[in-house]
Length: 263
Image 1 (cartoon, rainbow, N blue to C red):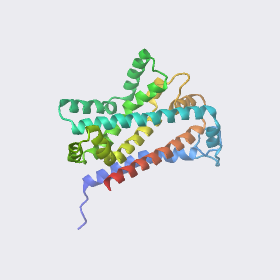
Image 2 (image 1 turned 90 degrees about the vertical axis):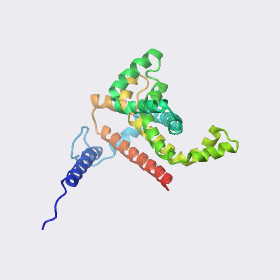
Image 3 (image 1 turned 180 degrees about the vertical axis):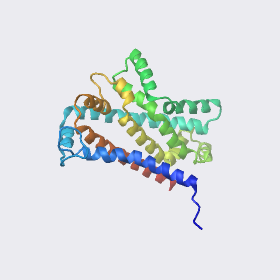
Image 4 (image 1 turned 135 degrees about the vertical axis):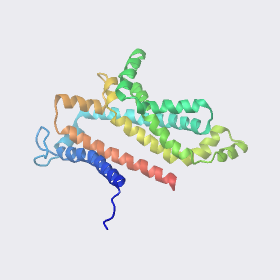
């Protein structure tokens, strides 16, 4: 008799491979195009050159946009990790209806379309003078990155026994000192992992940055969109390839930090 085929497992396997193909195929197309010799996009590319990478690293405009994105992403990672850790502690250790309400509010930036958030933030920041400024970028990106920091930190804080803090406070430590000396070292790998997620989310964010960018301050994603409209060359796939490498490095770093918590 032939072994019976589990239709559920077959459908699940097909779905998984379809998702992997959806993710990998664009990479297979974009990365080779970044090495093309012609001044326009073509696939497969003819010849091999590192010209477009050299042009990116030697361009003042591209480096200005990149430095702004790095600055905003770094500040976003700090703000999101500090606020997210405090919010997680309040939700996990606290009790009452406010914790549930706060959880719903944190999920908001994930559920609400980014275009809707971008319009709302743009109109609000215009009235208070933060549109097109570094603080405006940091505040907006912190809102977007905060849920990921909270989810990452919650996984670690939920495993820390609250009696450890109680023991520290019974010895004379304040609640903040007990958290700083006992709990924080135990969840620190996940906090750092959440900060890395916040960094990459901010660095790659195009929609909100497009609305908040001004004449002076333009992030790398905004600059890439402008170049696509005006001068589409293989420098765009070259930058995209560098962003892919950066994302992989950050994700590996986050995975290693979470692995330290498990061990």
